[in-house]
Structures are given as C-alpha cells and as structure tokens.
Amino acid sequence: MEDERLLTAEEAQAHLGVSRATFWNFVKRHNVPKYRAPLAGKRLFFKASDLDAARRPVLVERTRREKRRPEMTRPPGAGTNDRQARSRRGQCTWKLDTTGTSTALS
Image 1 (tube, one colour):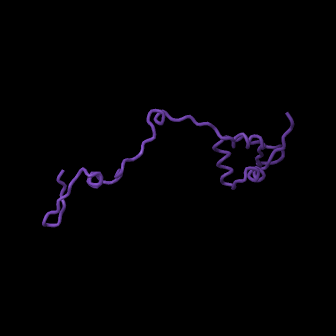
Image 2 (cartoon, rainbow, N blue to C red):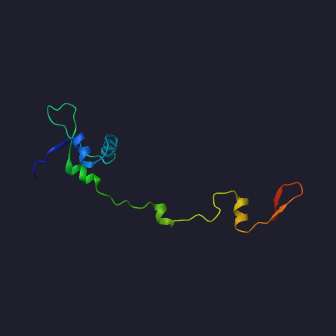
Image 3 (cartoon, rainbow, N blue to C red):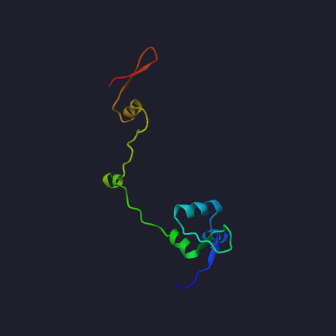
C-alpha cells in the first residue's frame, strides 16, 4: 500500500466540505482514526481514505418494533379531546341548553 499523505484538521474539513463543529462531531460519531506525527505536538492528522470510508452510507436494520408494526396513520380528529373527535365523526349529537351550556347526548 502506498504511503498516503496525512491531512490536518483544517484540510480534512475542506476535504469533507463541512464546518469545524460538524467535522469534530463527525470524527467523534464515526470513530474516525486520528494520527499524530512525531515532533508535531498535540496536532492531529487524518487520512483522506478514512474520512471517505466513514462518509459512506451504512445500511441500518429496522428495530423490532418497526418490523412488528407497519406504519400507522392517525385517524381524523386524533390528538384532540374525545368530544371533539366524536363530533367530527358524526358519532355524537349536541344539545344547547337554555342556560347556554352544551351537553352531549350520546
């Protein structure tokens, strides 16, 4: 294997085309190997091939819950209180008292 040139963090950010914060999040999340050169102090270096390999999409397996249950859609009126939902579906009739309050007849 040929000797690949090491990139500084700034060069690696430019290689990926991301900001500094996004780059370091990427390195941490994808466990990108870091290298140190002798006499370079605390400076970290990266191989372009390692960065490209971490950038490739990964097939993620569905969870057990997703396998068990198909995608569900919410029925009309879901998320509202029960009285409003029944009224929209025509399952409840309303009566207005002379006092101005409404009561359900279902």
